[in-house]
Image 1 (cartoon, rainbow, N blue to C red):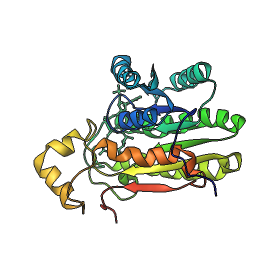
Image 2: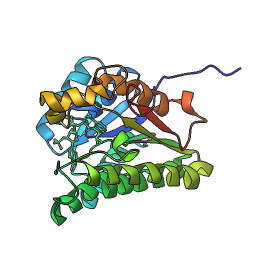
Image 3: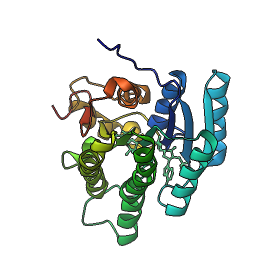
Image 4: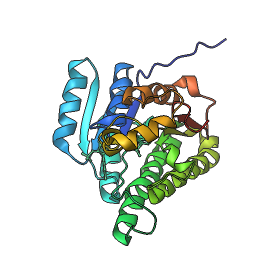
Length: 254
Ligand SMILES: NC(=O)c1ccc[n+]([C@@H]2O[C@H](COP(=O)([O-])OP(=O)(O)OC[C@H]3O[C@@H](n4cnc5c(N)ncnc54)[C@H](OP(=O)(O)O)[C@@H]3O)[C@@H](O)[C@H]2O)c1
């Protein structure tokens, strides 16, 4: 019987939105398990700091600034990764935005377009560019960070939830079309996690109390609690896992 391995030795992984929060936790976990990680977000300075810490811990990290709503910058990130490391085995689509918190009647066109530009168009074309290389090299793993907001109607985050529902469907489309080329595609739906992104929900006591009341474990998650499932999906241990949607929400949507 073949041994089960969670090692990422010799694998090259791109993690977007890796300068902080869930993306940073995933990048650090990948590096600690042997991957060469290319970490991306808009601000070079924040990336340089994370990369330096990964290197200090004995890992390999390349920090590349990239606005994932911009196709030219997406292509440049993919080119840079391929020229530096020769291959791309794992993509974690994680960088997302939510410029509007409020009801569906109040959102304007530019807030709507910005949310779709980064969270859906960005994810799609990052995956498309990377998958073209994965098909040629004989396989790979695409991991999309969606949200439970894409599964159940989220109050005050309707359009953000729509972008995440699109990511879940996109994950299934890639899984079906690229499975025959050994390119696996899976999604992770986090629940409330303590990051900059969720700071208003965490720091505003009445909102936080309401959120915790919905979580059977009676607390929110830490970013590192999303990293284990990403490590599994990136590794050969997940060789038969394709088109799956993993909900990591402390039981909120159970
Ligand atoms: N926290 C939660 O409760 C929660 C729950 C469900 C799902 N999620 C999902 O988890 C993922 C990570 O969120 P997080 O909570 O870890 O947020 P976070 O701590 O705010 O981190 C977001 C990361 O994305 C980068 N980023 C933002 N816009 C970008 C853009 N246009 N291009 C490139 N990078 C960009 C940020 O860096 P720069 O600002 O330097 O670009 C940062 O590195 C997102 O997909 C989010 O939807 C979070």
